[in-house]
Image (cartoon, rainbow, N blue to C red; front, side, top):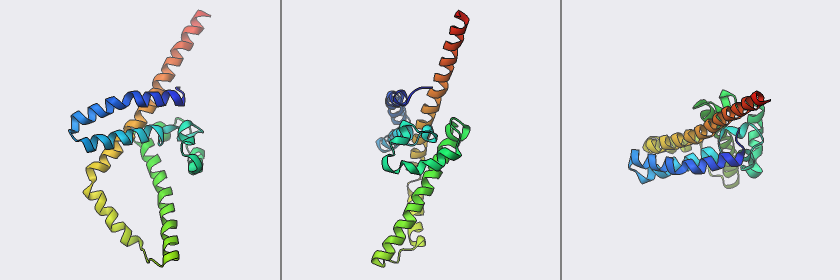
Length: 174
């Protein structure tokens, strides 16, 4: 299994490929930037190794504690952490729950301090509109995040297979 540094190198080596393929397929500089940026976030910050004390985990700095319940609940290298689609979806949902909690606290503090009278209905309506209006861009984010996760999981799988082959060769020589 590759180290965090190796995963980072693989991410940076894959980035030109992600940019090139996305640009060729979409012919849109904006979508290319969105997919590529989400790929970097998906690889460097929101990748499968958040289920252990890893480079990705430490990158969250002073708020990395939000990933501790995730680490307790999710077994390392399980389908729930490293599986395609489900792993990324689970991490995005988990992070979204934390963001919703922080937003709820923020709204309540804002209402309390400035008597702003913000309601969830008032906040929900524009958010839904943004989701509909920018559906393609949101889809590009999801694709980029998933590509980042896949690059990580694929390098884990390839690295594990390579290590097993080396071990078999060593045992045969012995």
